Length: 273
Image (cartoon, rainbow, N blue to C red; front, side):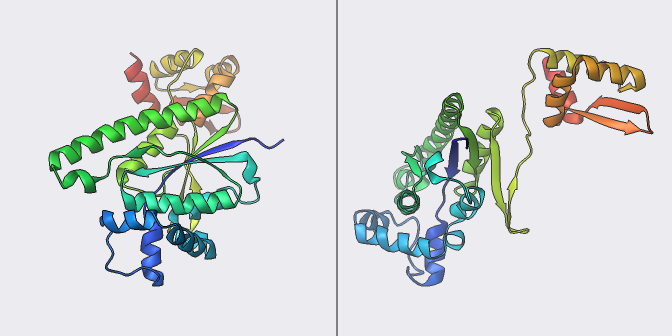
C-alpha cells in the first residue's frame, strides 16, 4: 500500500519570469505592479491562458513544479496533497493560482495557503511597517508549517518540504521547519540539473540517546572492545544519532572500531550540560 504524501512548497514568481522570456507577457510588466496582477486575478481567461502556458512545459516554466513533479513522478496524485504558500502580493497570488489550477487538473489535492507579508503594499505607506509585518509573517509562517507538518504526520502522511521558490527568507524558514519536524527536504540543484534530497541536519536527542552523548562527550573516543560493547548496549540509539550526523563510527584494521562525537554532536552535547 502506497503511503500518503504531504508536500509543503514555497512559491515564487518564476512563471512570470518565464512567461516574459517566452513573449506571452510584456517585459516591462513588474512583479510589484499590484494593479496589473489584481486585474489578471479577476480574469478567468488569464488564469487559463497561463495554465496552458504552464502545461506546455511545466518543468521549464515553473521552478516549483520542476522539483515537485520530478519527486512525485509515477506516483498516484490521489495520494498526494500540496500546501503552496507565498507572499501576500498579487503577483505571487497569481502564480499560485495558476499552479493550483494546473495541479488540480492533474488530480492533486490543494490546501489553502498561508500568505506572509510582501513588501509592496506596506512599503507604500511606511517602510518600518513593511519590515515589521514581514518579520511577524516569517515567525507566524514557521509556527504554521510546523503545526501542519506535525498534524499530517499524526494522520499518517509522509512529509516533504520544497523550498525552491520565493524569497530567501522563505527558503530558510521552509528548510528549518522540515529539520525541526524530521521531514524530508528536496530542491533543484541547477548545476547538476537534478533534485537533491537534503541529509538530516537537525535533531534533538531524547531518552537513552542523551546517555550516549554524555558518555562519548566525556572521552575523546571509544575504541576496540569498549566501542563494540557500547554498540551492543545502545545499538538503536547509535543508529539514530549516526543518521543525524551526531556521532561517527570508524573502522581501523580488521577488528578495531572507533566511536566518537562529530563536531555537531559535541555542540549539542555542550548545550545539554
